[in-house]
Length: 204
Ligand SMILES: [Fe+2]
Image 1: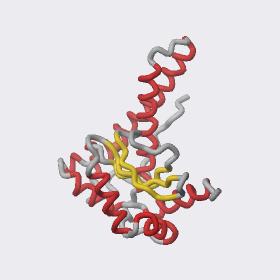
Image 2 (image 1 turned 45 degrees about the vertical axis):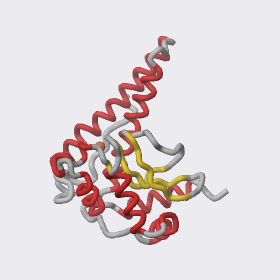
Image 3 (image 1 turned 90 degrees about the vertical axis):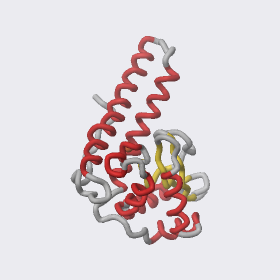
Image 4 (image 1 turned 180 degrees about the vertical axis):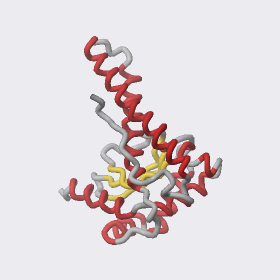
């Protein structure tokens, strides 16, 4: 039985228009995310095969492929939940306070997150993460799906900066897509993830 499975989108393909059009969402979910799910399952099978044969000559490539696909699956699953047709505005409560404390202000965080997403070289993500060793919020600029990430960081809000996330609508103008992303952020979802991450790492 497959270990990983493609989650349903929590809304219709066109639900995020005009910010993200339905064609993008359909392809992004049904083709791209589905490919990472398949890639993760296939790679687990190939690693199991290697164990059965006692032949680990391909293990370096297999481990890289596993990290790429599992991380792609995890980030896309988060991404769909991070967006809502009723999004935008700003966070409130504990999350808003933590953002102000750890970034200086919401505006400063907004600037850093936008820049980290816009300026990814090649394919990647801008991610607001909870870093448990310091119990702080940080922004990470993720390469592909799994590079440039601090071990143990818990992703809370992910902006996909791969061309497949925006090219059909925004062409090469990634900054306009990033601007649109802020209009669909599901802040209650981000706040719930922050609360859960905090609760999972009580102060030592
Ligand atoms: Fe993507």
